[in-house]
Image (cartoon, rainbow, N blue to C red):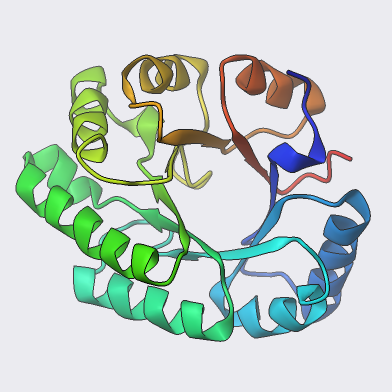
Length: 211
């Protein structure tokens, strides 16, 4: 399968982004007809107004970039962003819990977040920062995901780690078929994006306008 705009989650999460730059970013997304955009939470309302007459799905992030907020904070964030108009949410795993082996806490948080997403028909994307995990940890995280109705497992925030081929291969080999993969972090060329598409990745997160 060839890379197309339907694979692209066009992303702007730079804290220095201005309103003028946001509008330019949204116009690029509209021109390219990307499937989705992911914007900083403070820009959700502006983006929603600009995109409301398009088919582009609006998304944002929760627990970004560290994932170490209490679960209730993530839940409240997601509920507020839904009220503002998002249709997709990328939320970050708590790596303190991963490294401490607190798998029950990770599973509980994931299921609590998914309850909110499913009730409001929001596409869920779990950022697991795969390049920062051991293979054993990644396999355990995948096992937890497989016990849920998660929509996407996402490789990276792009802050702490980047998308890597090996992690995606592990995900593809072990995730159940209903969970898709989003590769994100350091993907700034069509050629690199195509490598991930060839592995079976469904979405590419990038801040580079590839089309």
